[in-house]
Length: 414
Ligand SMILES: [Zn+2]
Image: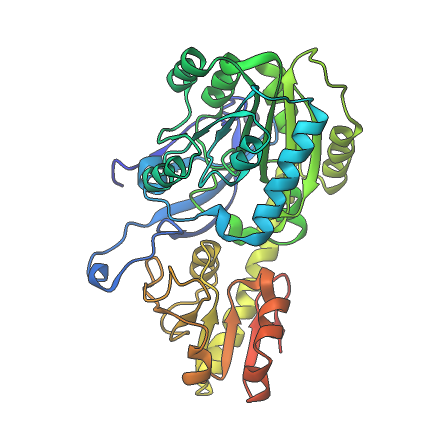
């Protein structure tokens, strides 16, 4: 194993060593490590994908950590490119301003600010803003557009520097970073040092309840170190002298949760949303390691069914392709054995990915028109969460005699 990878030995939330390995997926390269034609001859490193359950706080997590500099400094995902995301952030900013009486001159700091889409809505309301994001190119572009963004990982020394230059923050946000950071203790200590005594820390993160209910096992990949549920988070913030006072489910990324945190005894009242999610988690037994072992069994039954189907089709001389190459397709393809022996290419609508090859398996990514030119008999929807949309968009492919295979949450042939 290279120096870019290490295995931690304690729970990311409570530091317990009482950890049970509940399942392992097939090892993969980093899920976003698409390569160009020139890079095809360089072999890509593959890392284990093992899920551990903390018997003390019930937090589900990866302990294997790939160096974040390798994963995030050259990140290309830009949130402002999706219209629904822009609307989401616009509503988000509005509700923060209304609920927490933010006014002109108050400072909002966004951790993992990406292209500054969220901060821009605060800026328009005359709030002071600062973005922190380690993706250097995206940070530079955001600053050039007027959203000051420091190309850094958020930590205690950066928090100190912000405090000195900008003063304390009334609101700190962190969206889709709380699952990605290894050292959550450091993030929360840094938040504490920067936040006003009556300030609020809000983060959005993928929700474990959705991973469970919607069979989103393919959202398990190395960038996502933590699979958050409410029960462990309550304990975690408590240990840092803070309280989770609201937690609301939202639709982003197939099912996420927006959590609101303040200093213990802060101005916001404890909201019933936290207790209702705790009840829901107890109902599903998300706090029992056995639940996750059964979950793995369920995934592996689906895997065997799909492998039988695909190898049968190949034996019958059928041609197959894939549709959609999101990061999570890497987990799906490796764990379900969908390699170059099964599919010839993948169509994807994102121009940035066309012409590249998938991480490790090196399947070419082509435009969506390729399914009309190459006419595969079957197309597996790797971006299966968008199945209905893709099927609607490609009625003509079906009318021409093609078939779609939806791999999850149940296998369907259309
Ligand atoms: Zn724990």
